[in-house]
Image (cartoon, rainbow, N blue to C red; front, top):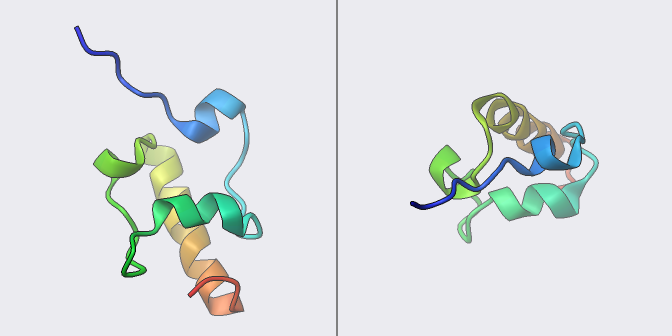
Length: 64
């Protein structure tokens, strides 16, 4: 039986923050698109928050 990978934010008990650019960079593909939930291995709640944080960081000019 294959084990399911846990959500990064749930295991580390952290909250998604748009200022943590190095962490958010992991959830962006090579062509600067937000990765799907299946690839990021985030739970639904944190996938939505990460998506919003990436968009906010882009508007602030922190991410491409």
